[in-house]
Amino acid sequence: MQTAESRTEMTSAVRFDHVYKAFVGRGRGSDAVLALQDVTFDAKPGEFISLVGPSGCGKSTCLNLLAGLSSPSDGTVAHHGAPVRGINTSVGYITQDDNLLPWRSLRGNVELSLELQGVERHERRRRADDFIHLVGLTGFEDHYPHELSGGMRKRAGIIRTLVYESAVVLMDEPFGPLDAQTRVILQAELLKLWERSRPTVLFVTHDLVEAIALSDRILVFTSNPGTIKRDYRVDLPRPRDPFRIHETPGFSELHDALWADIRVEIESSRGRGVT
Ligand SMILES: Nc1ncnc2c1ncn2[C@@H]1O[C@H](COP(=O)(O)OP(=O)(O)OP(=O)(O)O)[C@@H](O)[C@H]1O
Ligand SMILES: [Mg+2]
Image (tube, rainbow, N blue to C red; front, side):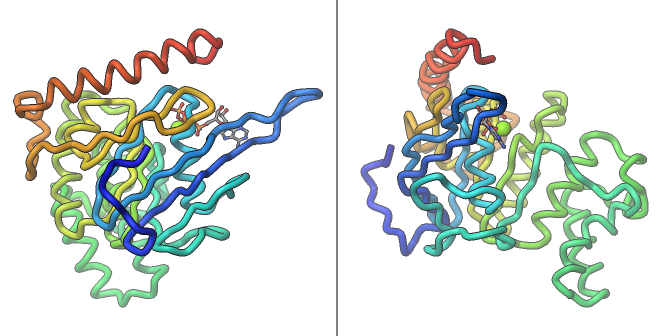
């Protein structure tokens, strides 16, 4: 669902235009799974947008389409006005799994994308150390992933993608398995990093408080097949403090509205045996 504000394709960093995605069924006689149905939305440069909805509603599928890991069955997915065809190397993708290379140190992992871009050694080190400092990991540069805590590995995974400074960053439940306190600390750090270069972010989460603390807009998906049920604008002032977001005027009303929308979808997916 579009807001009243008019957005043209020319100014969109990301545009989904009547996108459908069906997956072929597995096993004899099984039907194709329609993951996405008529999904239309766009993101302006610098917008932070969260995608929320019940499990299986197609959130990861949306990110995969934009990253070019799969293609729509119908409709168009465009990145800065050009349809995505094949792997889209201009987006940064932070998956749920941190995917750090175990044989590289923290610094080696953060430098990897710069190395692939051909950035000169001295400059690579300067940029990596700058990001390592920003998330409080100075002193751990030479540690290997197994020598870092879960929260440290998440930080490393995030800065490894952000150091590349892509204009569009996709994040799929990046703080999923972390404890509540570490999540809020990382949310605050992510906001600081985002403020630096203001990439467009598509952020998948199941945590409504997290979505409100971080986002400019929140897209609520229906249960499978996923389509956009509501497009919320988060008008809470920035800069935001994720530690005190509950106290911000307007927070409770928005949280209640989101929860009411999502609860119906979760109940309807449970009713069909989807968990
Ligand atoms: N490669 C695939 N092959 C077949 N079906 C798939 C594939 N990827 C996703 N699906 C199906 O598409 C639907 C949407 O999946 P998707 O992973 O996008 O959901 P999601 O919203 O990210 O869920 P979750 O919150 O559990 O991560 C599901 O029914 C899923 O089984
Ligand atoms: Mg997913």
